[in-house]
Image 1: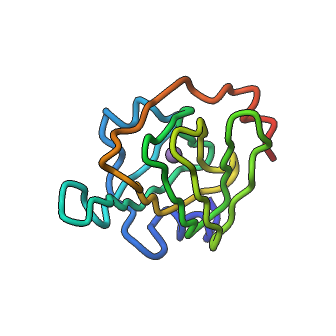
Image 2: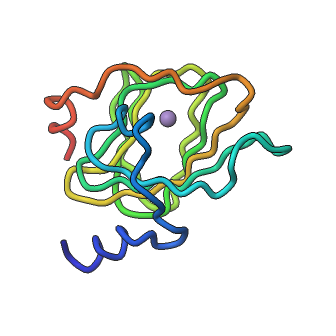
Length: 142
Ligand code: MN
């Protein structure tokens, strides 16, 4: 790891938090970390978490019944909706994910990646987790 990667792995802006608990990590390839900034189940009804992905880590295909917003704060990563080209992500990028659109997000294979995840319309229900991103498709992304 070079200096930049070590810096990113330490959280950059918000704390890196802990390795994802098993109920989330089973839906990821590789290791990711979560630090909740605003928990759910309160009057704001808008859980916000800082998610840090190790190089090569990504989540499975999934859908959010109430949508999701990603604010990229560190590293380099990818966002892809089903049937579309993957979008390369850098700090400062904002991704607005409509409700029930099948997608995945995660790190580039050679970089840590950090985003803030905002769960919008949280009352509409939990994430629907689907199959992993195929290795052969992920490995094509440079
Ligand atoms: Mn998502």
